[in-house]
Length: 361
Ligand SMILES: NC(=O)c1ccc[n+]([C@@H]2O[C@H](COP(=O)([O-])OP(=O)(O)OC[C@H]3O[C@@H](n4cnc5c(N)ncnc54)[C@H](O)[C@@H]3O)[C@@H](O)[C@H]2O)c1
Ligand SMILES: [Zn+2]
Ligand SMILES: [Zn+2]
Image 1 (cartoon, rainbow, N blue to C red):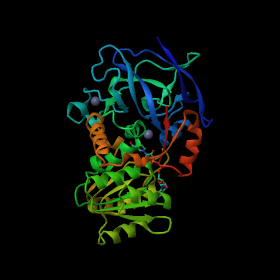
Image 2 (cartoon, rainbow, N blue to C red):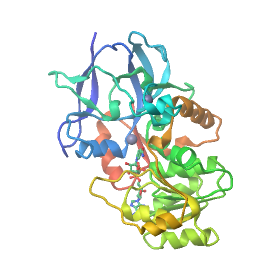
Image 3 (cartoon, rainbow, N blue to C red):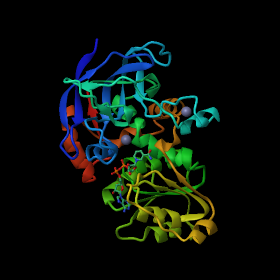
Image 4 (cartoon, rainbow, N blue to C red):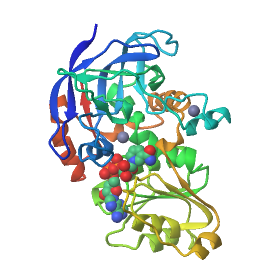
């Protein structure tokens, strides 16, 4: 029996989001229906509403979520009703060229639920990142459900589903930050803040946080930054070099997604160092660099999609560290809100007032 639940949708480009009733079908083969307990508000949800991702309106927003599996379809073995899960947007296929080479974290053919959730009049919804979790219940592919220790707070656990995992993974997976490395993180919102935290977890010796907003720098200190640089008033490349014996950092994480901050990252790293781009640029942006500098400085220029995470490997491990008090994932939850307050949460995010607002059901 299909169910009717309350959810937040974006009906048209730029229009405020609205709470409405949607229809969630019973799970088909390989699918699961999850009762959502918490879902964070991510910048990407706002990009969807603004038509910045594609124009397949109406969107069912929300994708940083945790909840309880309510029912599963035929052939589902990964999870069962009652399991506490974090939803992921990397349900790996096991068949593509990346999976076959033993690198499922790069899977090129991830999947979502086959059936569609709809409005009451039958209009099909496009769930954000194949999830759509600003909803009392949502339909996903079973592989999008990653079981974690149910002792974790849902509002905290759900954040691993996107931004916090992207930032942690940019440092520890993509950047391979190791013990004794020097690290700089440019842009310290939810994603950059998590990169700071990941660098501390990995044993970095210096973690230099760069932002244009002093409030974000203050938070970055709490998350593990050893030094902060306000790049509105101070040249970040010079400051990072100065703080690293004149050399530059071993790993620089760019968590803004702009050409000027990418250039800062490029020149603020040591010879043979690594740049990790985790900020998402927009289509019109281009980058110009002297090719001789690209060659002459050596090292690696990498991009990080979803922190190169493998949900089944990374989510339970990070939740365990959090429960042991070794990873303060709770620091990312600035406020918890009701389902009807998503539009106001976008506003606060836009003004830089929050790391994350989290809808709690
Ligand atoms: N690669 C991925 O898989 C992935 C996943 C989630 C989000 N993202 C992207 O990561 C980026 C950051 O996301 P977020 O949720 O942290 O956003 P956010 O808005 O919370 O944080 C952005 C931060 O950058 C700072 N900033 C802006 N301009 C700057 C500049 N010129 N120099 C230094 N700092 C500057 C802001 O003050 C803010 O603190 C976005 O582009 C987002 O789309 C990527
Ligand atoms: Zn694959
Ligand atoms: Zn997101």
